[in-house]
Length: 313
Image (tube, rainbow, N blue to C red):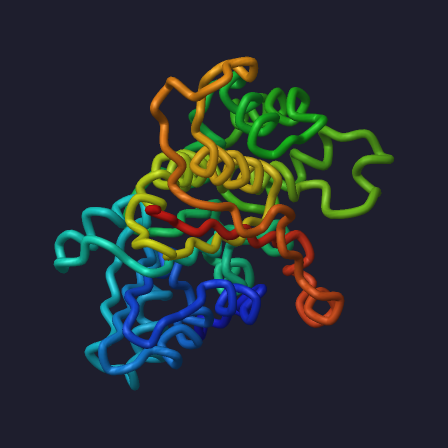
């Protein structure tokens, strides 16, 4: 199956990067190279692009798609949590722009065997890097009920997390849960009829929660945000596209903290904590997909773009 993915908020992201022909740009979630291709097109002879992705299929596809840009491009199979070290290893200290598109790619959702989709029968997997980490199957079959409840409640914001966790544990005591649709059936049975038949798929939130746990998505984002801001050169920008409220709140809070890190009580006449602002939040409100984009690509409807600019003076 060919790696296909429609890049969300493509024009808006590229525009807000303020690309310089001789700049250095990083995409930490390279995917099918949609954003990357548009960045590379705008680079001159002195420009450089570094793409990072943990999915082997994405690496193969993006390498082929960016081949025309030759030595301007460096592609690394890794998780963006290692971005600082990856850049150091290739002799890069500062960059002019960073992109993160935190959504699951269309390829990963549509390729049933990856186990991300609750619409088709497949082995429970959900790993973005199939060579590393624990799979969704291990989480579902080995985590204690209390931990399953916490994950589904916290990462999925699922109202029926308690019932779902209890029924997962009950079902696996009879037989190991092996496939996506087995899990979907358990989730359905854990909900009242009104919730099962309401708007949206009943398994969506639980699958999101298990995927986030499986790939350590929130931990990776939390651990890396400050590093990425520090990697930016003066007037460099970071553009982050999120697809659910947990990520969006984390990005929004981090950008605000980096703009105004002062920890002094509000009634202090002058700042004495010594924390210095690292830049400016460009997007006071997130940039949302246009109506046209939402209609053409329904998966874009929950996307939000936030932008931060580094300022050293």
